[in-house]
Length: 342
Image 1 (cartoon, rainbow, N blue to C red):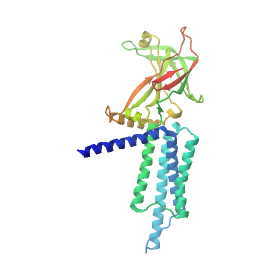
Image 2 (image 1 turned 120 degrees about the vertical axis):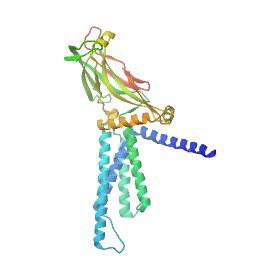
Image 3 (image 1 turned 90 degrees about the horizontal axis):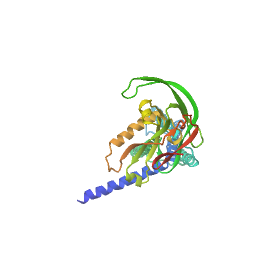
């Protein structure tokens, strides 16, 4: 009877350790991203340098021809290893560069990582210090490579999301007051197809930090709102310091009255956001599959539970009470309760 109790305690300790590791990675997203990028670059340059400098091969009682082929094989292996590391780092960089925010601490961590990785080659060549060889060395390198890949995947899962823990501006919604007209065809529910020339309003989305342009749309209707997606984690993960995550998804139009809502067409536009919310489209699809797989594979009450919900902002009026186009800028703020505007 004691063995199951100890097994449960061990599993709880392992869960706590993994949750703590995840918490650290999520809190230090930019720093961990800088570390992974620098580690991939350092491993690649180290391999290329080893290939360029050559390696002493001392086959016992072997012919020169055999030694020559050994050197060629080692040279090719270093080049292949460097090319794989460089390719993996470049692919990782493509997916995270839009969500990466450069900071002095991130640069420091990246620099120290490069110094450590390349310094190991210097110590090996000059001081004669080298790591274990044989099976032990191969296993150690495999564990380090696997750890780097796991850390890269964790940071990729976090890319494109914000921590839902404190109030922070995520988007500026600028109603410019400019209007145009568009020929629109649609079919109201339970009614005949219609075609009408509708007035559209220009809406510009800006980055709140510096006002940089994010996107633009021309939308018909009386008002516009923004919808986002919340990833709610289990209370155990929240208690370990891993916050719920949030991302913006799209903006959509609306109408002032029920009759207009049921009669006139609706439109939604994707938000190509920038900064911490941005993520490469190629990774977004893969990330979505992984999150859906995670969500479907965890039950309620599980320590690793994740659930996806949607949140909408308040509607921003495109026209005033007289029907004139509104010219105003709203700041969309992410709060622990969802989205609010000012």
